[in-house]
Length: 522
Ligand SMILES: *[C@@H]1O[C@H](CO)[C@@H](O)[C@H](O)[C@H]1NC(C)=O
Ligand SMILES: *[C@@H]1O[C@H](CO)[C@@H](O)[C@H](O)[C@H]1NC(C)=O
Ligand SMILES: *[C@@H]1O[C@H](CO)[C@@H](O)[C@H](O)[C@H]1NC(C)=O
Ligand SMILES: *[C@@H]1O[C@H](CO)[C@@H](O)[C@H](O)[C@H]1NC(C)=O
Image: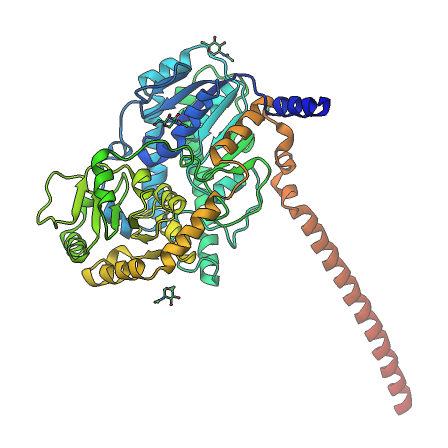
């Protein structure tokens, strides 16, 4: 009995975390990011922490210990000079995508955040925080808030492993398998794939580190006043992060070696789902006796902007199906709508994918949607448009529950063939179910995992001891360059000495010979 009490006491102490003040910095307004990030903030509040969130999405019914500091309402597209037709991005190179959208867009958006009225007022207040959590996605200036409040820094990512996530915390980067998240490679581990990945990684690193990060530093000087001196560089602040929560899971993403402070929480937004379908859609799906096909190109891609020929091809294919079709369609008009097609401006995706009658999800392959399909065991037909979409779909295709249809290849024949294949060959549904099982087979739910390690960092004042000790070394020492150079030098010296000795011996030997020969002749 005493022993049991002891164990119980130990368990409570080990999990104990006093209510803390947490600054949760997730200003990026893209809906898909916020879908993943919001449950973390709310769950921290539910656990009794005081959470201050810097956000672009106001929660209408926040708990009392959840304070919202609003970023000026601007879509990322407004900031970079208008919303492009996202379908045009299907033709953009990864380099162009980084320069024009991610870097320039990230910087422009950062300035909107720092210049927001509420954010400025908040930064001028006298606050204390026990932890700063920042999204790791082109908003590096805000890492300086950890320094401002003298609090440990945790990072949370909305996508999985990549070059920056590795070098940040000096996690060993295995370039042969860790492909840049936005680089579409048909065969990533082939010689060409690895060469392209190395080239892109170096390109990205140089631009990111020596141009982009300097711009972020400029914003810190311009907008964040009264920081305690000396102010560390943003690069050093990032590297000193106590925790990185990554939106990935080895069952779906490439398995990799991670430091203890790099934790996979992929699917954290999925587990404690408690909403139900709206009554009308529930009825539609319950009545879909031949099954249902669901099409949604995500929050940034607007189906209505699709070129006519491609749109008509899709509509004609749907007309041929016995299935009920749901399509997220943002316009009021829809010419020649087939009878089996239901359109809505917004679709409760998680709940739709959870319905047993949904047989296939036609998706652009965004990570959140792909995770939702994986979690619910729904096969995919993927039409990647930009960003990480191709790589997410390639991964799903390699597990046998997805088929990729390249945007340029959309026509009636190709789409019908793929749909028919996925709907009639049950290997896709079987593989999807198996993936769903693997994705959920974990010791703790991903949201609880995130909570555990966030509270761990708070409990242990930043847990400096669990960071990679190589962070204290120069990069030359960390990558053993000095030792390799030394061994290389010693080897060269040794070979030189050997060569010298051999040549002396040889010449001495041949010298004797010639002398002998000479004496013989004379
Ligand atoms: C959380 O906020 C409440 C109300 O402002 C305050 O009373 C409490 O002390 C705060 N908790 C911590 C850990 O600072
Ligand atoms: C889920 O919803 C039901 C009612 O619809 C409620 O009773 C229950 O507490 C909710 N569970 C969670 C975890 O929010
Ligand atoms: C179903 O698809 C799998 C994977 O592509 C293939 O191996 C199998 O032969 C197909 N089955 C039928 C009946 O076509
Ligand atoms: C690094 O983080 C620790 C807390 O984990 C903190 O004590 C230290 O001051 C930080 N160092 C720098 C250079 O930011």
